[in-house]
Length: 325
Image (tube, rainbow, N blue to C red; front, side, top):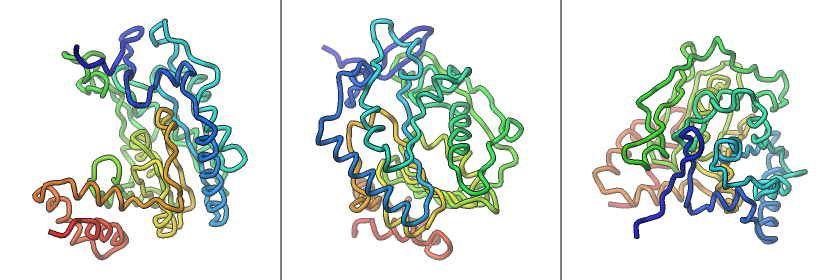
């Protein structure tokens, strides 16, 4: 018997993740919930995060990204039914009163162009969806002076027909290809540092977006990737770390004005490491240790030249995390 398919087709060739380790459809139909212990752990972590962020005067937002099927229930296979109360609502309840959370599901569900937020063949939102989401987040930050939304005049969208999404790739030949891509033609934000680690442990730094803008620190999974270009456009400095946790050392290193945590709904069944315990350097050591010497040397070579300057600490993190040869 072959392996179970990892993607399922809904209406009009919309594809959705299935048979994944996070039991996405059990979440969707309300069968998978947090037990009392996990709810308590979530609540305790939100207390820790909220207490520290308030003590440092940081504007913190915990952003919950909905699973694709939860904002496109009319496109899912008709035999699947969305539950009115799900695991995501348990996490929202745990956050209440401790951190300012932004649950994006109502915003996207009620948006007249929600069908354009996602590609048919990918689990992630596209550049168009990320643009609307970032503007929604900027409007909700409530910082002195505020941050202006990114206008239609600042962004240029195009359709890339050759793009093959992560769900499309699960079919041979691929189905439902294509994506909406974006450029900010006049943006001055530029990536000044990228440790080029794949997924967890990746750290990138953007500078030069808005001279009078805030310093932003973004901790998030793959959904944060499409947001970065827009956020960096409104920040004078932005540091993005690929993790569901918060690195306390980086928090004190950067002393940001704004911290955003971006978490996709399907990962919420696992409580992230505590803010008092987590270090992204653990991921660095694991990833660097798992590479063959040639690939590791290629990643580390640029770091020697970056040991001076504003991002020297992150180059040093890479060099110190490499195994001894």
